[in-house]
Length: 312
Image 1 (cartoon, rainbow, N blue to C red):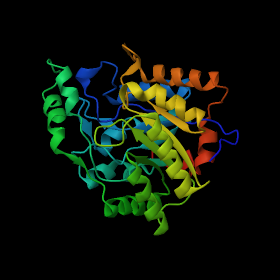
Image 2: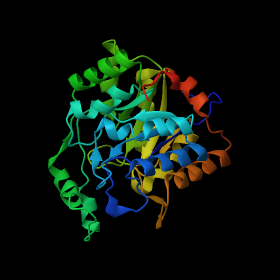
Image 3: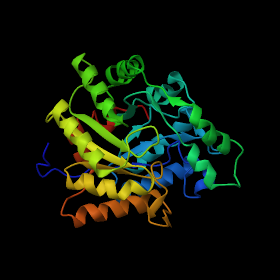
């Protein structure tokens, strides 16, 4: 799939459920912090904001729709960015918990992990000894015994409820090549409608590694399975973020940055904000001779229902 002079969509994953508060003071925890970080990222050039919620008291991942509704309307009022709500939450949440917020909010977009995987965070625990909150260390260390569960039945339920029920499109998060085949199988069954938005997720322990050859293989596989009926983007976990996003831009893809995926801005340099990462990838994209998509352009490229059709 060639670029055809299209613009590059920047997604910013603002807080996520992977990194814990001890790891960086920059991670937004409270609704006020999530609003401020989201608006700054949008102003810096992010057309899509990928959003999780955290318990304001201690920063642990939260599926509570009431917490989401403390920041979603305020971000929408302050920005035209596409608000993409997680349906993944965290690996400790049930499917019903994960769906509670997006079903209430009826967003334009929702993330959708395309399979069940080991989602291992436990190596990160060895880097810290003094924890801000008592939940952090066991959350990380116990991840060697946890999975993120999305069976075919789960994925179909998410599609029926959010896609057919609310007109949401999906950020299809593909952590391995098999996830592309999972999506192709479901498309053959009549689920999901193009254009598909594929997010190649490289570098999570339990998924495909962050090597450039793997990105090329994911891209070639998607071309074979979906032809010209998809858009694609890349997230690189940790220190691989900027290198893989730059490669994606050169190959005609879109990019995802943000403190959910990486806490750094460069080698040995912690990011002070999500906007720092957005500004850096925007500069790299423009230095390569490409243009960054506006929210309006992103909506057109992805076939979204529009920001006036959400419930917040």
